[in-house]
Image (cartoon, rainbow, N blue to C red; front, side):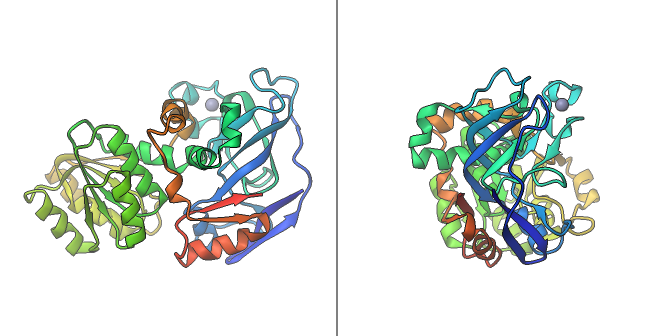
Length: 347
Ligand SMILES: [Zn+2]
């Protein structure tokens, strides 16, 4: 079969690799119907996250069960399923707590020795616990399938950020970052009842999506000017709930600067750089909480799925470029130079 591999910075290839196959009784093989490229894949693409030469890449996919191991009881060949961006056993103490990303048997698609999502098929460990079954009819609805693909990562991550930031009905929310996660965080904040949502971003095509997702205000400035602009919009106070969806020192500094005293920052931007702008004195003086981290999206899929199925949540607009498997390297280039927001892959 063919799958995407990374050989060095800016060197993404589509290679012939061994077919995905059941190796353990709890495995299943998923034939990929839709995959996508994540903003976090770009850290590897740009060389700021180490990868072995030829390692698989891609952690967002949905598809159809092609094969099941002897111990798989809840899934059958032909079922349409969505995978979260990490697998988990569903049995350990962390899984019981809903923190599937800390599962003692868990792992990340594309880790050495595992299949990546940007390929024709994927071997899924602990298939019963990892995969979530989707209604079979969804396979025939292109727009819906695209929206469902967001459950693999960006929608659940946006939801995690909104929960971490303590979004409640009536909250004033600010979202730092206009990538797919930031935009999905706008959707998630609206879903949780936010009254006002200030989206920070300076790419108009993206902030236009933010508005359709529920943003009430847009701030295009960065750094100090962004802090001043959000404070002006909030009677000098800042937002109750601030979502940080970038992961740089500047974005975290902005998040601290725009959080209202007593408020919280929901932090899901994968941290890059040292210190990440966390001004401990500011957090102390203003009783600002920082919560978040890698999102246990497996735990959120059952909650978010009905809203995606009935159209209440439609994250499909974050996908603005579609490629086939051979086009994946072009997809990385397009996301790297920011001509694409998020790339959908139809193998
Ligand atoms: Zn577990």
